[in-house]
Length: 284
Image (cartoon, rainbow, N blue to C red; front, side):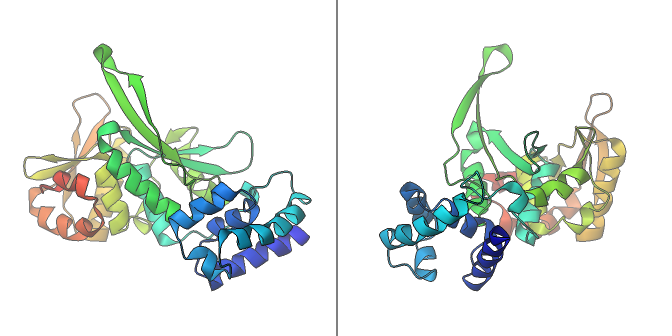
């Protein structure tokens, strides 16, 4: 009962001080960690002042009291996944849906009740992934730790550099996982059109798009032909973009091509959301 009251209080504070619920709850429940508080200040120096603290030392003193009470109610000092509540705003949903159309991956946790999402890119797209990480960090959905570059041995002995990060785990992400995965296989949800915003489209292109002559190709190889037809329909219904499904040159693999005549309209729609390192995909 007391834990529910605390969670309700945090939710109210988040709305009053315009801080995301997941972000403010982590400040309170991990607040006794001085390095965590400092990372909060680096993310947004105004947060503690908006919550009425003049410095980290003042915040740490107050949060010690709150954290002690909370630790008596739960085994973990971090808010449990089943207590991280939604709904999630349109920016977060746009990022998730756009990434899932591309390289993003959803994982239903085996230990626990929630879902988390993984974002990754090859090493030469580091700046884009760090930008994406910063977006989700400022919204309170991932760790402030900077993603590390890892190396893997690729084909013919080449060394591949991979950079990745994950969101926090939320039970209120479960419905997204249920939409996108059937028996572990990623599919395109029938209601994708409800979530394919200009930002989502931009992220999809930055993840899996590529300039081909004066058109644009979306590498939808992992989706079925019917899924690709659905996406072509959504592109037209949502944005009036003309596109078609073509063979990827491999049996049962397909790609979507946005036609040359739709490229000026496409640029107008997505360029405000495209990271500078990815503008080449639109011919810039």
